[in-house]
Length: 238
Image (tube, rainbow, N blue to C red; front, side, top):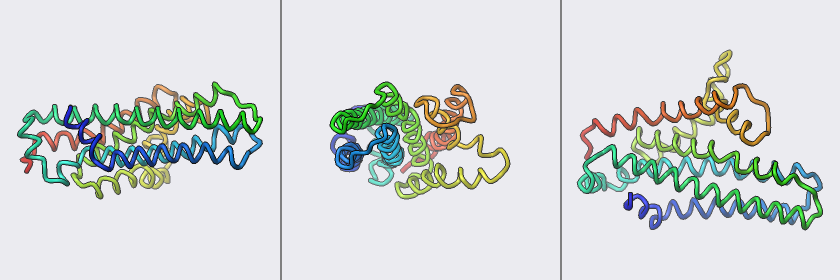
């Protein structure tokens, strides 16, 4: 566990990911101050949508990175020598990923929320603060799910570039193609995650109830993670 935390602290990709996400939150917040929109819905929906999209992609990349780091750097044998229990190695990675994702998400949405509140006061616009909090923080579970999907594809493909490409295609492209088949769109990870997000934020229409949306989102995460996990445990890794 300490080794995985140290990698997050000292290696460049996690730092740059955090900087990019926080910079997006700050820019979105100051844009409201600069452009002074009149509609209260603009303060709540537009910046939160922008940050949510960036968070999903950034955390998916971070998930792939954590899963593939030893493969790409050639330090896998050193890791397994220090800790021969492979399940423990993967569990440590997964726990650190989830905790790091939650910390980054909370900080970024709280930063954006504070700036939105400040912008609304400066521009003399009345916003529903409870709705703002729900809209911002309700996106967090889905962003964490995207991090898990990235982790799963990284673990399965053992390639940073391949993992990112397939994870993005799976989430944003394949689901759209599958939706061309009758009723298939209802069971894609995109539909389940969108429904979960909409239930939590109170925005948008939904196809599934929140319980089924949560189960479906988690189910897709497991479908992606389990094959790579089994492969990692059984293969002769070098």
